[in-house]
Amino acid sequence: MSDTTRLSLFEAARVVARRDFRAILFSRAFFFFLLGPLFPLVIGALAGGIGGQVQRDAATNLVAVAMSEADTAALQSASAALSDQVRYALPRLVPDASGEAPADILKRGGANFAAVVTGSLEAPVVTAPEDQIERWRGPVALLAATATGTSPSSFPEIVTEPVASSAATSRSERIRTAQAGQLLLFLLMMLLAGMVLSNLVEEKANKVIEVLAAAIPMDAVFLGKLFAMLGVSFVGIAVWASFGGVAALLLGNQLPQLPEPALGWPAFIALGIAYFGMGYLLLGSLFLTIGGMAATVREVQTLSMPVTMMQLLVFFLAAAAITTPGSPLELTAAIFPLSSPFAMLARAAQSDALWPHALALAWQALCVVLFVRFGALLFKRRVMKSGKAGRAVKGHVGGTKTA
Image (cartoon, rainbow, N blue to C red; front, side):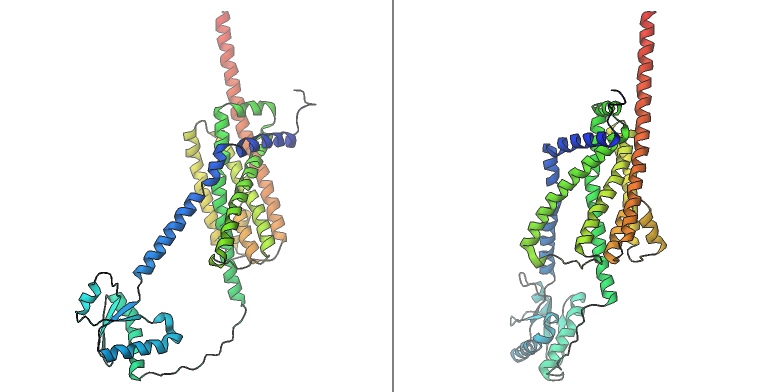
């Protein structure tokens, strides 16, 4: 192929991206990859439901009352009188006229009592484990005092003056949005970036990558693969977001509500997509470099572990800087390429300034170009080195035969 007909860098990258995108998108493995995150979600939902049911069963508020009939009725009347004021702090009183000892009542199968109240209204006795005694002796004392008339029988009406929000409240709420955005961004990147590495290792084993490197610039191969995997990742995210939207419609207000970010939801989501793209390209370029250095799958796993651990460290760096915007720690997290997407997404939740994001995206794009150039150069040197070695061996063998 002559230089006049050779594809340009971006045209060659587009060809590689289209080839990889179609090959991965229409494969059966990609379908099962899309189903992969659903299994942890289903298991987590089931475990959370079972755990919540166990917690509800364990934290019972049933209290047996083994007092005289008159005292038991007085306690129940006091509980009904106080239910509007301290409903959730009061126990559910269950009369018990069995005559058994309090310890035997607590051990009774199927009853699930937290405590047993005996004695009289003037001197009630609470029998229970130590933690349950600390929990119920105050409410029992209040009920007994109300029943005997030694506590106020009426309560003053509380006048409330609600406010919409305060500066401290808004800042605290937006931090929750920043944390949720960072966590979602990190999980998506770690889940999807591994596809770049597996694809390159597979093509190295099949010698496809060497054929591409001989036909087009190695920079174009790397760029094409990165953007193909980025496109596939966006398809996966769109599928998962569709399932999430259906779940949100079905569950409605049962889902936790996040406070609105400082830039508003449309701008925050748009920046989240942009920062995911940049973060994916940065991490993917590192994975491509690792794939170029590794000769076997075992070497890939060995070399990728430090990068994964480093990604955890930069995530922790960005997470630690959330509460101190403008500090040296936060500026460091925003400037360092691998942590910059996380730090800037958190800033989008807390600040309404747009110019820092334009600057950050330009800086991240420049780092992507530098990472791709470095990885392509390293890979090209290894390929050219192996090629020269192969030609030298071939010439040596040929000379021996001729002699």
